[in-house]
Length: 568
View 1 (spheres, rainbow, N blue to C red):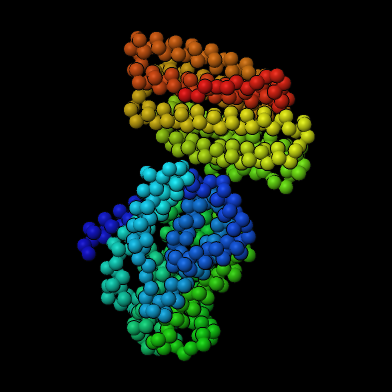
View 2: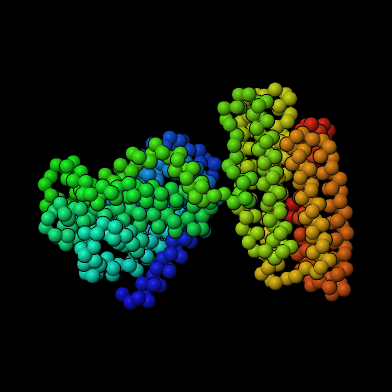
């Protein structure tokens, strides 16, 4: 195969892989949502159960990389927590040893990924465009993304196929076999190239069976083991690639996989150099080493490594979690968008439960303010970097709405006191108002994108007016957050004063901008974008007003109905 074909295959395969990962993650969000999250939480509530799930799934599909990628997709979609994913990933490393056992029995077991990927692409596409329900369309997107992801892996593996069959590569294995560190690095590099630890270990098994490592079978086993350790490190590249386009939690999940394999190899390496590892394998195997059994002994070495590694790190899952939190630190913009924390055991004490809900609503308000701030900076400063956080934060706001609404609904079923019962609908309305603020922030981000794409420019006066809108809306947000956190009616009343300013600004700024357009100081397209900006900020003020009025009313309607706002 020409070098050009190899390079093109790698680039195209990597693109398909990442595109499939994004499609699958988004489809999982739509198709699975809250119900699947609960199912997965129950399945992996205990880390050992998650370990068994990971081992079982990987043993069936014979691809630890695929299992790890799926787990990263679930974490990226918010359907698994970092802690829950750790057990599944550790289990996947044990499950992948099944392939080595099949190789030792049948000579070579290979999974034709494209055979399964093509039907997934076809069925997924048909479901996505022809599904009658939203659930069917989302399921189609998951299948389509999964199929494309596997096709990407297949393209990359095919691009490197000449290396697997090269006699020079085989000679390289033999020549470095007596240098464990170099053998480890070669095994790691080969696995990175072929994107499969199972394939790399299978090559080592076949070389050993063919006598490439010599006829001293104990020595052949000692030569093969460093390659096995290296392949376990190399296989972590698949998870790292999968996490490139994923969120921070998914990146941490990928690093759990990397740390597990790297630290495990570091622990095992001294025993390999001393020859103790090979001696242990020979001691626990019931057969005599020979050309027919050396592959099975390599499978034992692979299994012992992953089983021992699991025994060490399963009890240390909490330590691994803390380590990756430090290794992949949280950005300042993410500090307010951690998962919603509502304790279900407090539902039997409604008054206490309601206090936790109020705190989470206040945190939701802070998160909504972040979204608005990013979108306003993006449009005012033509800063593309501020657009991505808006979309990410909007996902968290949607999560707030779902979790808090579900919690309040469950609380209502407990037949709380009248005092608690009358407060529930007010809180529900506040949550909905904050979710709509998130939507308006996304609207502003979208018009900021349009402004950037079309290279439009605001006049100096328009920039000054936009800055006034930003300052007033930020101050109103601060007043509403203070009102929510401290039940401060004075802060709520201060917010209403600012809302009147925003209403006047909407009228004045619309008029002045039309004048600028008529005088030729501003283009029509930029003028329309500015008016959209003004209208969206004013709508944010209306939703904040609803919350402020609720606080003034003691979180009861008190004869004041929230305004039903027209949405455009």
